[in-house]
Length: 551
Ligand code: ATP
Ligand code: MG
Ligand code: MG
Image 1: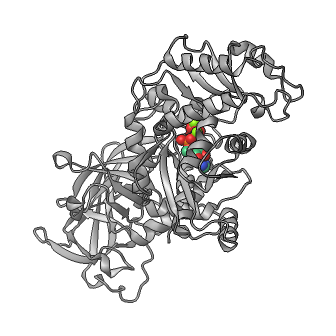
Image 2: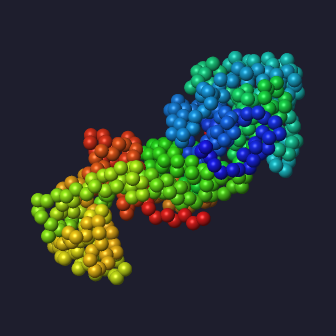
Image 3: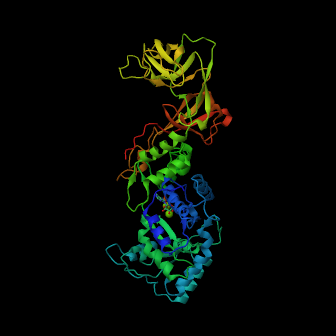
């Protein structure tokens, strides 16, 4: 069981199964392969595959490929990889709407034969004018009363390639005065000489989304066609096709609200712009809200699924605070990421009373609360590196890190005391001379309390790594919500900082794509692609330690 939170769709299906309306449910996830999947799609994936898992039904993966110019095999491959990475499996083979083009063509012919579709030659501008507005009924097209024979002949010739792209369309004959504009003789087919990634040059006419979607659902025996709320107004049309065509099943459309997350955009078109204009390094840049970007950033499948559970499924729109996503991420990593020490901005510490040529090895748990994660070895020596912000001269009383004349505990090691501060000619602190108390390994010092704990590495054993620090890609909470600006105007120029970190040597054997908590700094992941290449270590910052999500 993956999706544990109940929701209104699940409740509805429970009732339908109880009354015997269905024996088994079939859902589908129907992406258009015109970009990479994003966090919004994860919600739809968790819902559709989650329902199928919960009710032991089926969930199809269907590529909704009716716009060949915008689609590609790269997108098809990435979508399959992302669904699998999230931990879901589709039922049977991958499906494509384009597999049904022959059947959809026959359905169109059926509609023409029953006098419910016609070939129209209005140009797009006239079409718009005839359509009317929300407050004003439309007008019938002058082509609306063509005979069935003429329409059959015209449509066949559209398919045969006798007309220019865009010269004619096939429209349903429904009602130009319908209050719902989607019912004002919607377009079913348009002429487009576009090479299709699946069907090649077989077709020069392509069905529209509305004409393809419900019928494809019916062909596949989908029982519950779950989609986002913007399709609510299309539902009467969805049903009109199902009622007026000899389809093999009666799928039902159910809508839920889209996921929006603040400080980002979730629209493939906008994400594509970020990629095409090189604002990011690609669809899987760790700053992108794409599933592959989040994966590279260090999100785990569990954390994404947990987040989808937390947000639930409703019919009310809203914006989810990205802090909630980070919260789901942290709570998974807190439990499952092994610990390590890494110093990002080092300052040298010399332990003057520690023998010059001595090295000790401390064997410590990989995770303080989970023995099953094993152990790691920390070499300790006379010269160490600590984080420069963990030292302060003239520190206030509440500074529980290192300051002159005071003690601090080195995580997993001894208590040290800062005796002397060495500065360069500009007055910058370059080294701290400290002493250690040999009696403090694994136990508290006698007669005094040491509050602070800081992380460290042994200088000669430390392993340098490229560390990529990420911030939100946008500086504005609602980058796309302002009148006279584009979301591109809010790109955070400091969303990526590349620095060098000095890691404990156990990280030398870390495989790519392994999550860690760098103690006191945050969660990091070894880069999926670059880590380990030519022996170089590369870590991406996933998220900081401090949780700011308030329920
Ligand atoms: P985009 O606006 O990003 O292009 P889309 O809806 O056009 O998204 P599709 O490929 O058609 O993308 O989406 C596949 C499925 O994912 C659809 O059922 C769609 O409703 C759902 N989906 C897309 N975006 C979201 C979102 N933000 N929240 C929930 N579901 C979404
Ligand atoms: Mg779509
Ligand atoms: Mg879209």
